[in-house]
Image 1: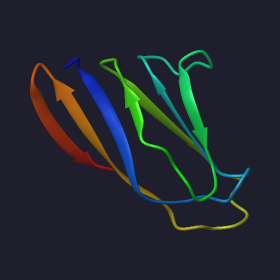
Image 2: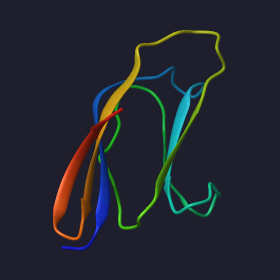
Image 3: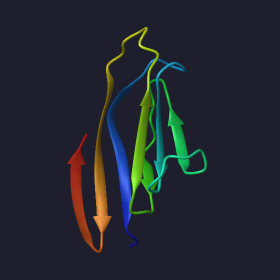
Length: 85
């Protein structure tokens, strides 16, 4: 299997449309490398077939929600590692 990074959310609660989490691939954060922009209560599993994954969280700071809890599964050259965010 190809090297990849997988982001899975255990909990996800952001203020819909005002608090967002963007996830993308590559070394630089650009609009072209953005895979998904997430807000609200439901978050997908995100898989990147690259050596780099970036996350950008934005908030308007007016209403507080729980936020998110996630883990990364990194698979490189046949080894799998887990990281908790």
